[in-house]
Image (cartoon, rainbow, N blue to C red):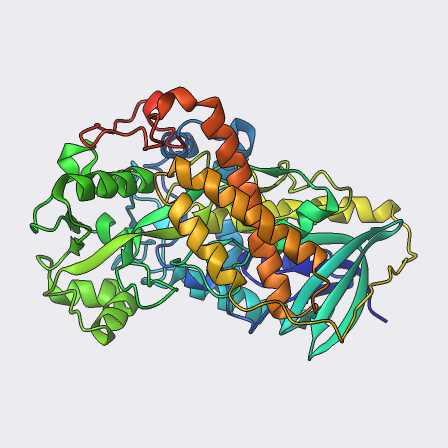
Length: 517
């Protein structure tokens, strides 16, 4: 009975939109790792970028901004698809019930964010992701051909001669489900760091599983650190202060309560995220302090409350009134530009396996994602994956082969503290500006942890799966980082210090936007 045309691992925007775009006569299973709306999509604040019914903008300008932000490492074909098909999916989700803010004359309100040369960000207050996620979820729940399993953890996937078999931990028991095609839409890797803006589900499960299946993983070391996370080091999950706050005029200030971006980039506060994050690190070295602030208090208080109701409320609960106070901020792990390598139809290098959303590497982001391109990427490429599967399924076998999974219920639980150790290694070795010495040291430690997890015969439960996923992702990241550091050894000092001088100016030039070592 657990046979499906398609199994989708992930219940965020990419997974749900993929289910919506698959044919109505397909039998589909969507796996939600935890509760249905616990995902990075629901946390997205700023909006979704795209040229839609705007004669003053052009997809080619959107592409140009995307290239600049991504250090010109963007895949040109995938990026062309992203910007030129944006209108298709923005129009579709509006028709599915997604509501975007409008101006008094009834037109859509398009805001500005860092790296964009035009106002092209569609938003729902400051909780756009939640609006999109909940509306897509409500629609999927009306589809009779789609099952959603909540609190269903993908523990293992095996390739079969008819597709795939999934081993799923559900309701404290194991269930096997089979499919002809699989879509991984499992989100990012934020929990591999001590501090992240990501939700609790972001442990890289899909990436680790794809790696074990033999899929190509590309540029996993291309990690985005958002410059304006709320600086509360008491919590692992840091509340994001949206890019849109700077888009509406907020200033970045150092420990002296002075603006400083003029020292590093002519775009000031509206420079792309990696530029701002690097600038903060440089400024911290210059001033000897890691106290930084975001200031929008000079704006009308009612405008701030109406434009950013969720941020205003969350900051107020933390003891800060953004209409009056400076907001403490600091860079924090936020997004992943690399992942499971796919083509423009989200096809991986494993036949029948697709990947969409943050776990995938489409190449559209280059080495730094342009603000609000993530929700757009999730929609565009999950739709294209669904359409490709629909065509292939016409000639696919109707039989199902079920793989066997060996589960030892009496196996010991993994030792305490493995995930904490992984996070500490990554935070020390690979945060904003990588520490070359710590990269090599951390790589050795991660290899030891990986060997222990793989050969320790531990109990397969949520703790083990997440620790194994985090360790696998850390291993891939540091493997890439070590390779890059070795190839570019002349850019580091003999002491292993970073290659950046404190007064280095960041510019828009291509050769100065590649910040990996």
